Amino acid sequence: MNEVAFFENEMQSSPLYYIDSYGGNNVYIKRDDLIPFSFGGNKVRKARNFYKEIRDRKCDSVVTYGSASSNHCRIIANMCKAMGIQCFVVSPVEKYESTPNSKMISEFGATIIQAPLNEIGVTIDNKLEELRRSGHNPYQILGGGHGNMGTMAYVDTYKEIKEFEETNNIRFDYIFHASGTGTTQAGLVCGQLMNCDERSIIGLSIAREQVRGRDVVKESIIDYISFAGLDITETEVEDKLHFYDDYRLGGYGEYNDEITFVIAEVLEKYGIPMDTTYVGKAFWGMKQYIEKEKLMGKNILFIHTGGTPLFFNKM
Ligand SMILES: *Cc1c(COP(=O)(O)O)cnc(C)c1O
Image 1: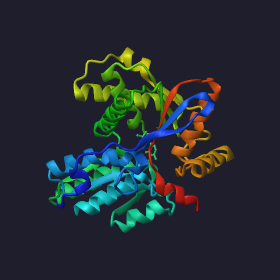
Image 2: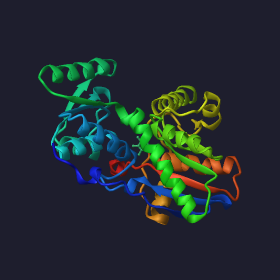
Image 3: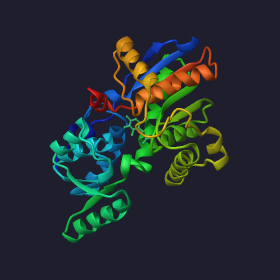
């Protein structure tokens, strides 16, 4: 197995800087899309933790799940290629689409195993079983890098944000980001709870509806609390968990002309690319939220969670 320099090196903080004064607030952006591995994004942060476990457990293959256009699968396939280990991506047939991400996943030599949505679980189990039976030592990664390793990645990101605040003598009243499988939000909220910070972390759902979406984030938080042995109550979790589905539109992948407009504006004004599925949608949601809640004079941080290749799906 090859050691991969990026993952072996200590993580550098991603860039964080002021962009604009929407509605009389100070809006900053944290560029996790610029994390220097495989076009960046929040899935690289999660991948760092998986990398360490794969290395320590001497695994020789990875089995993961995701659609052909998944940022998570691109990064895991790239990481496996760099490590010189096999990568199996179980992918729903229903959602197959040829995109820059899907082309890269194939380019990295990952084996795509297509299965109908209702047979995903058994397909993953069978693959793991088959690998073990033939003397392999596979490592399983859930879709989107879900789980405590993924959550931990954003507990660490929260530390980066705290360091920025301390160095620059500023405090963010709000932190906004796109919320999907919920691990990013779970990690940030755990970081907040561990530090007893008063502020609002707002996860803007890009797919799931309120009840289920929020429950999944909550489960991830509770899971991490017990995993890390933290002394945090469920009431405290409830109090800090802000998951909004007001801007999800029809659900995953759905967007409208306003989002396309905001994306063009952000690229033209700040030179920052955003996609319609995650980051552009969340950025639009944040702008709507600022207006609706009449936020004024607040320090606001938006986390750009990546997805740069998705920008080119529309080109
Ligand atoms: C996966 C993803 C998200 C959502 O992160 P979760 O931890 O699944 O909530 C947000 N933005 C981008 C670009 C992503 O790829």
